Amino acid sequence: MAKAIMIDIEKCLACKSCEIACAVAHSKSGILEECMTEQPKPQTRVTVEAAGEFGVPMQCRHCEDAPCITVCPTEAIHRHQPDGPVLIEQDKCIGCKFCLMVCPFGVINVSNDDKVMVKCDLCIERTEAGQEPACVEACPTKALKLVDEKDLATGKRRAAARELVLSIQKDNNRDAASAAPKENPKENPQ
Image (cartoon, rainbow, N blue to C red; front, side, top):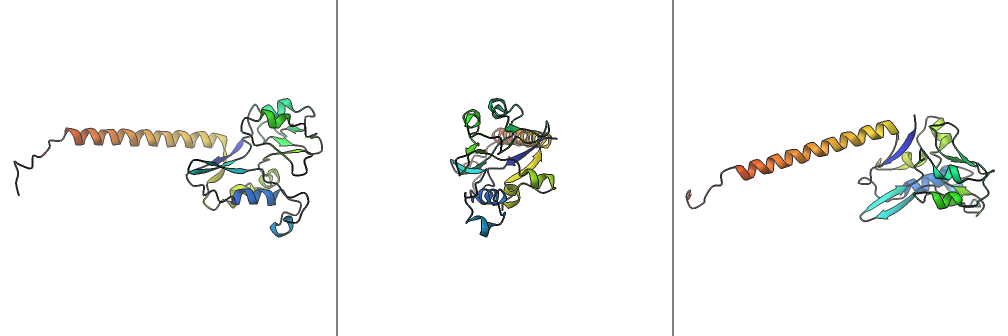
């Protein structure tokens, strides 16, 4: 089943722990202290963008009909499995930037050495080993979660249903309050 990273923007502190964890996870050493001296510098595949009062972690959405796969002239961008994440094979990538131009979310970037393209791979090695992606694991408020896309849709439906019920209850309470007889303070002096 396809997986996606769900973002609860109300929980996001914009602390950028996800960015750091991602860069470290994709570094040569995988160790923060060591990767700081690596060349080229480790690069994050998630970026926390400011949106009003919220921070929004942005990374590849692994689109079902991914335009980056369609435009890649060397077939460097592909999926290993039909419901797997969209991946870039670095040794096939020629850095043409066609994928960057067609990405609807703007989450594909040029590598720090300006040779190839990079993007979120859902930490494929980690997820295949039963671990969460580095960004999800690092989030101190659990604003990021790796979920099955089916569960994501179910959760959104449940949340929408709860909001609808709360709205109806609020309307009913407001109607009941406006229909209640009002006391006239002049008639009932105390």
